[in-house]
Image (tube, rainbow, N blue to C red; front, side):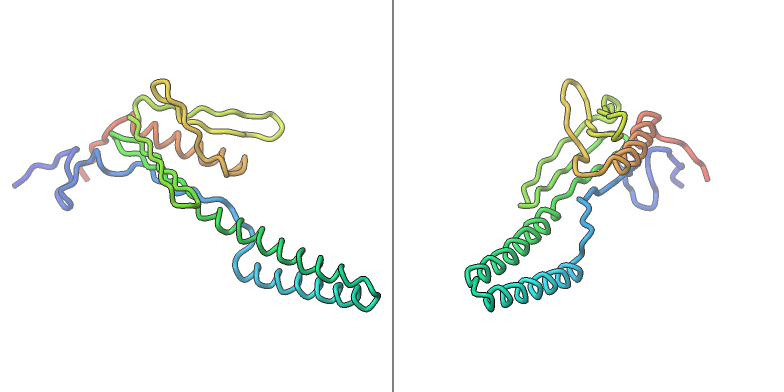
Length: 177
C-alpha cells in the first residue's frame, strides 16, 4: 500500500507542484457580436443607399460614391476590430512556475516563465480612473499584463492573481481527507 503524500497524487500520478493554483485567459472585450455586426451593416448600407439615391436625384451624383465609401470604411474598420479580438493572454500559476503566454491577433506567441516566489504584481493607478497598468516584476524584468482590460476588470484580475501568487508562496497544503 502506497502512503498518502502531500506532493503526489495517486490517481493521476502527477506532481502536486504541477497542479494549477490559478489559471486565466484574458481576451479583449467586444460589445458587438457577429449577428449585431450584420444587422449594423445592413442598416448602414440601407441608409447610405437611400442617402446616395436622394443625392443622385438632386444632381449631386458624386455624393453617391462617397456614401458607398463610407459604408465600405465602416465595414473594414469592424473587420479589423474583429481580427484584433483574436489576441489573448493566458496566465497560469503552479507551485513552481508562473507562466504568461501572449498570443497576438496574427498568431505570434510570446511566453514568459517566472518563479512565483520571486514575482510581484506592480500596479500603476490613477486616482480618478483606477488601475491603468499592471506589471509582473521579477528579478529586474518587468512585463506588462492585461493591457486591454478596463480599470474594473484589471482590479478584479489583480486581486485574483495576487491570491494565486500568495497560494504559491504558501506552498503545498497537506489535507489527508
